[in-house]
Image (cartoon, rainbow, N blue to C red; front, top):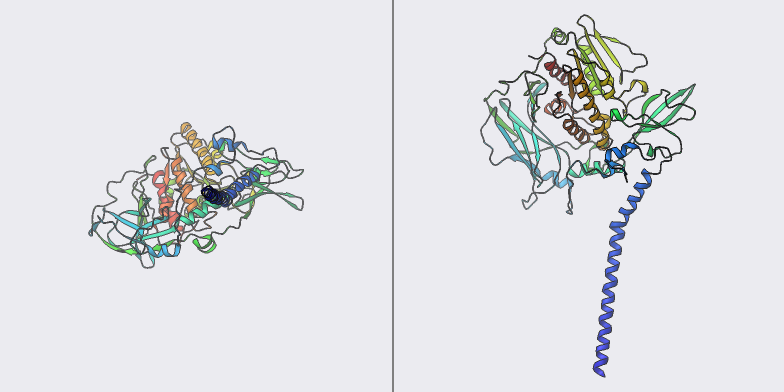
Amino acid sequence: MANARREMLEGGRRRRWFGTVLALGISTLLLYYTIYEGPHWISQQRIKIQWFSAKSSNDIPSFRNRWNDSAVTESPVWKTTKPFYTVLQTTKPFSAEVYLQQLKFSLASEASKQHSVGDTLQIVISAKDTRNNIVTNIGDFFRASILTKVKSKAGSGAVGIIKDHQNGTYTATFRLLWEGDVTIKIQLVLLRQAIDVIERTKRKYPIDLVTYRKRYIVGNDEIDTECNVDPAIFNNTSAVCNYSDPHAGAWWYCEKAANISCNTSGHHGEIRHRDVNGGKLYGRANSALKKTISGSPSKINVKKGRDPLANRRRCVRGLATPQISGFYWNGVWNSLVCKNRHFSSQAGWQQCLKGKTLHLMGDSTMRQWWEHLARILEMKETLIPHAIHKTGPLLARDTVNNITVNFRSHGPPRRIAFTWTFHLHYVANIIDEIDGGPNDVICITMWAHFASYPVEVYRKRMEAVRAAIERLLHRSPKTLVVIKSANTRKGNELISGEWLAYKLDSIMREIFHGINVVLVDAWEMTSAQHWHEDAIHPAEDIIVQELEFLCSFICPL
């Protein structure tokens, strides 16, 4: 009897112990779900409410299905597209301040201590902790260059090729292209963690980091309506004007103003930028870090060697552009693609461009080409009714040499002062209106105004431009088509900075790969120079040399 009682008591203790453990386990699971799963589920519901509650006839724009290549789209493609970059998975605490102190560069172990023109130089970049272990911060955004400064003058410079080895180490590879003392410059533009902030911001506000409007003038009144690539953000019951053109890869909607037809012309303009803050990982006004990294040796001496400009080809369409496509020598750009021109007088420009019509289209960095050509050639401008200088259309002529230079701004989105909507045309449609011929030169750049949007908005627009170029070259094979890349810049990295420009530039190069066009690599030409600060609008000497490279294909040596 006593034994039975002891067994019963012990069994009760075991059951109570098991119940306690079971309760703790259930509580832990509930707590995990609440912390990690609950907010995620709630955020997904908020996303659905945000994107599918617009009360208009365009609740789900047709382009969403096109972009996602599916019959039914649960959420816009910019919510589901794979990241442009490798996602860093880490649970270790990270200190940006400590990491920046640890980050250094050095010569690769196999690098020679003797250097000559024509050699390749490789630099290793990494951060090591106090135990000499490499800190595995994968996906940092670097720029690398070699340079020789000349006091009070433009110097020499070339870019290096950065490779991320996905293990915390990076290499920068350079071609040594001139003799003398050469400084190695490694610049951390953005930390991986800062890029994560940009991408999270883009996912949170995929299409409304910048907001646009169409303004109507009715008597003495101004009536503004909101515009964007997706009408679902308007959040009201008003009708929507659809200004999209799938043929041009463009989607654009505006709220319909009461008692005003959608076909009524108005003024396109920007309303506001969303106030977003990247925090301590950025400089002032969310600018890029662009911190110069120290290392050894910081300078090398390069002896005379193989002439990098020997045996260059004539500049013709279709030439491949290598990753290092040129360099500055005493401020003068020397192409490694082909024999590029430099003009010492106005007469040289006139002789090259005689009888030519240049059709320039895109953003304000292409307008710079128009401005400098008009200045160099002292051309007479023809004023276009209702046009403003910032967006055009602009027209300049040299009647003596029969040279015509046109500029047209690309269609929305366009962050500008108010301009008449009838002057903003989609680039693919502008190209389709050009007959083409051996005396026609088409020059295109589009990137700066697309940075705040998901990359698919830009990709679709540029794919339509490529299709229009292919149609043009089919009907007129002798037409010269030139694509100008993005250039380095300063700006709010969360909305329109260098990382976002770099992403779009990479997509542009992918889209136009293999097509019979010329690339003017403004990204490299602005990265290789070191005597001007980065700017959305490069300095005059850089723009002139971009134009000289253009002319190298119009009148090859």
